[in-house]
Image (tube, rainbow over all chains, first blue to last red; front, side):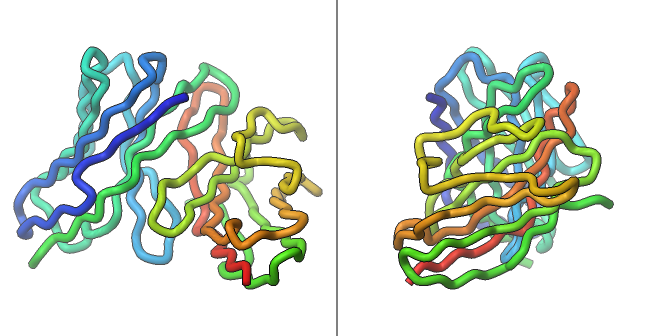
Length: 115
Length: 114
């Protein structure tokens, strides 16, 4: 089955700096890669996702890049703010055009933004 | 904004007891999921559910587990005879389907088995 590795496990950055979190996946058939943000005491919140037919997607300060050949994808957060502090999870899936699918998650990255 | 809700937020039970975790998915979503996260470990897929049937299940989802959609809004996970190793955070999620991939998660139920 799919295996997702995520690095680093913890990341501290100064406010205003950029943060990058990287994930690799094992199953070349995976075609859907969401990123989730989990704040303390809350469930994972979907923040951005990318499908295998695109290499990059951006939403304001957040961007995700995908390299299908190398089977890795990354989350980039620019101009970090204290409210970006949370645990971030990457996930991979073989998502059909219709139907259910299971997400395989990385272990998470605890991001701390220092004011 | 519609959201997935879960009750209770924390459930403490004794080993061997049955527990039912409840979820209300987003109202127009068709696919429902349960995941769990043991403290310090990855979020793991348990089961997916569509049209009143299990679509997929992981090897974790053994005969002790069952899911049900008892009415038009609730989605439940039952653990028949809890074990210490069932202690975890359990997340419910839902997705709209029909080409819309996004899975939206609830806040979770922390299950503690003593």
